[in-house]
Image (cartoon, rainbow, N blue to C red; front, side):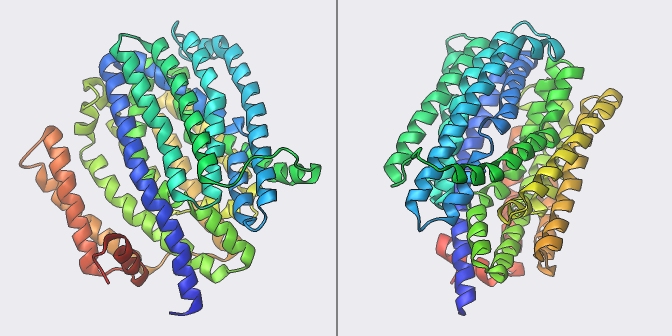
Amino acid sequence: MSEQSSSTLNSLRSVADGASLHYVGMLVINLAGFLLTLVLTRTLGATIYGIYAYGTMVLQSVLTVSNFGTDVSATRYLAANRSDPAYQNRILGLAYATTLGVSLVVAVFLFVMAPTINAYTLEEPLFEPAMRVFAVALPFQALTYVVSSTFRGLEMAVGKTVVAVLGPVAQLIAIVAAVAVGYSVLGVAAAYAVACLVAFSIAFWYALAQSDLRPEFNFSRREALDFYDYSAPLTLSKAGNFLFKRIDVFMVGIFLAAADVGIYNVAVLLATVLAMPLIGINQLFPPVASRLHSEGAIDELESVYATVTRWSITASIILALPVVIYRTEILALFGPEFVAGTTVVILFVAAQLFNAASGPANDLLTMTDHQYLVMVNHLVFGGLNVVLNYIFILEFGMIGAALATASILAALNILRVAQVWYLEGLFAYSVTLWKPLAATALAAVVMWLAGLYVDGLVLVIVGSTAGVAAYLMSLYQLGLDDRDRELAGEYLGLMG
């Protein structure tokens, strides 16, 4: 094996380590999220669940600006300066100080503006006090992102996964306990805030125990300016990211009822399962991309980019099948009123497939010093999404919201791939992609045939299992890439 091939395999191994561990974490996270949503929808109903979902959505939207882009900045600078731990400590201190200051300001603003938000959106009496309780959780969630970025920048996959799991698991335990003793949306919001505090406390302690880095606050003015020059456009980029990813839920709350918010949110959450593979890849791809780009290893970077994009497509497309084919049966688990979200599921699955097919193009742009372009992308497409949502929601209701946002996501991801190709000369696709597409066709037939014999939850379980098995066997028979085979052999011990 040549030196470059060996180096490429090592880079892919780092990404695969992060992805495989993250998938384990995502299984826990998604199971916790599924159980939490199931408990809340079954006990609170669509309207009260809609208030909870809307409150957490508002919280997630302001989180995009609450750390001023310090999570991504910390990842980049920690990864690119491994030989200078003193500098890494100062960067970490800068990230924590910035996040704490900005998140406190945003939390106070959210607390004060809760009545106004309620007046212009849901107009539900319980939403205002619930939103104020959610605001208390904001600084703890923002600081947890910085802890996560520490592990990410150091390419410590285990630590990143542990921190990712802490929040959802703590929320599940605390909120289920609150529901069990009879609390409604206010008690659930309080349990959410307590869970965020506990998750951050454990995550921070864990980071100190697993790493030699310690946040220091004696950073220079020049270091701060360089840091903010990178993080400031990322903040605007994240704001735009919210506009094209989650503004639809916000606008559904403005123009439609709280029950519609609940139904729409459940449908969106089902479709976002498809993002798991790419999210896993992106756990350690950014620091690897930053390192390779700074070293000038462009050929290796393109090879890694192409390989992980193929992984993203291969893993996401099989997740899409059961969600689309069994969408009615899955939505019915949350209650009969949630079946109204079937068309929303289809539209968002299509959008997520475009996202998966683009691979880590957005992170690649960010890690190759095109952060301002990423900011413009997100702001422009975010603005377009607001306009399309306004027009389509008034015309088609919540299906219009899904159509607008899905179209924007598809167009943006196509543009990202073109920009990476034009600006960096990196291209991710080859004719070998016919293999997962052929395997998908066979799996779809298997899943459809299962519906002739069973139905309901049994169909979802049996059909999905049979379809995934057919997909994996087909891929194996069609032949794996040499690097995939070697990595699979390392992880599964099945192939030499």
